[in-house]
Length: 226
Image (tube, helix red, strand yellow):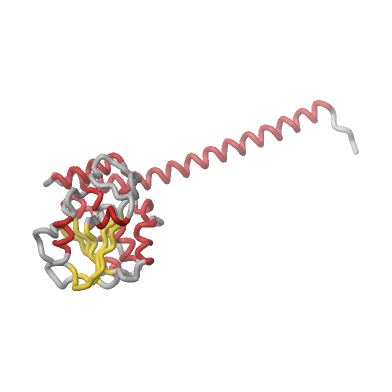
């Protein structure tokens, strides 16, 4: 076999190194494009909801609290954030939460939509008008069978009564840590639930997920009961 000259070897090495550099550059560009596309889709999801927030004038303190929390944690506007969230999946560990479910303090409704996708019938209520408008906006983007299992409304359980039949069970996720005096809430919810219905309450443990709007901190079951 003919021996390669020193110059030919240099050319081959140069070409090989150049090809490696080109491949590396292509990979970096590809990764950047993927990130840009992902960021754009996320921005579209968030911006659509932010338009609703800008369009609807806050009508009470609960609207303002909802808006401030979203400023701090806008990821909560994305359905992808909630898809694998333990909160809605944990309901499966409590067979008592069944039938027509009342969600007290539903917020933007993301968790209820996921429950409805999985066959649950849920009615979400909240004191924030803006959050309910967002929840109904998201609901309309779902399939018809999911929409039929969902409903949202502004309601105060201490003053309002359910418009239809009573609920079989209820749950409340990350709400009671924001309530100074939960007693009237629990009394009011009795008027919304069937006799002997179960209520599942989920709160952060101690100072987990702490923010300035938390007025109660629960370190054990006794704290929640008292």
